[in-house]
Length: 109
Image (cartoon, rainbow, N blue to C red; front, side, top):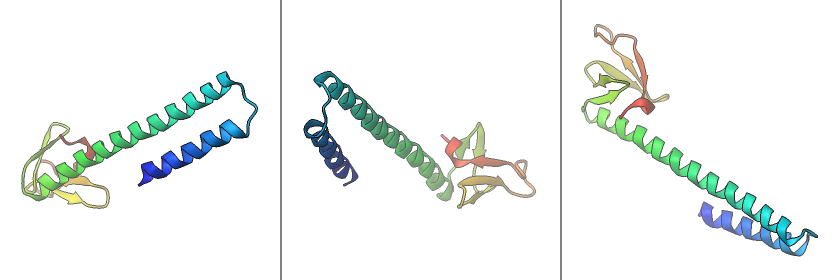
């Protein structure tokens, strides 16, 4: 839905650019190219961010399913770590070799 709204806004921008400006054809083409690059960059960044978030949530899901997850070269499991839901950080439990160690879930494979 957001993409459709974005396309409508861009379409209205181009209509305004066409009818209400005194720019030359070259200037209009340059403005169009810049706006198109900004929109494409925003879409690419959004997709990258979604993929990164999904990877982190998959690691958290595997941890919650009592599986071992590798994060920063450390094997993270429920025996040695707890999960802080607010920050998605694995925190080493007391009386384990990983006591006090904090690892972000975004660094997991």
